[in-house]
Image 1: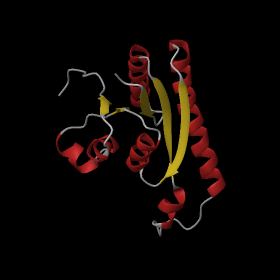
Image 2: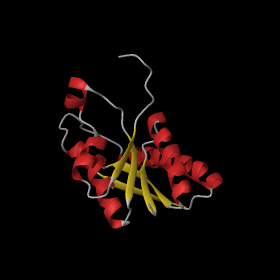
Image 3: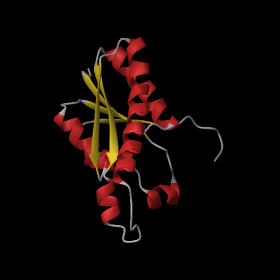
Image 4: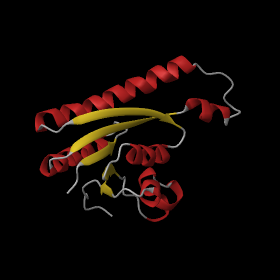
Length: 153
């Protein structure tokens, strides 16, 4: 059914759980995977923040690339033993959800598999969610992996 899954990751434990689920789905479907890491566009962020007077762009870039390396290496470590073909993309963008939607279209993915914090109520409304934004802006289907419930409400 699915041939090419896009799995965005930010390197968090929640994201790692979605990576695992996406890789297993890809194995079951005989699909390939593209692991995606969106690096923040610090120039856009800093330009818009007058309070930040100085910054070291090389340090920001080095840190972002280090985070991307770790997150994408995790995708590779999960995909390789499962025999799932995997490519890796890192992009710099001011908007995470826009980058995810754009990459899914450009790479001709037929499913986006990503994590959601699963916030409910006012927290979910106020904080928003990159996953929610992807859901509302993507023409590519989105499979949302949510954390297991702890039974606490």
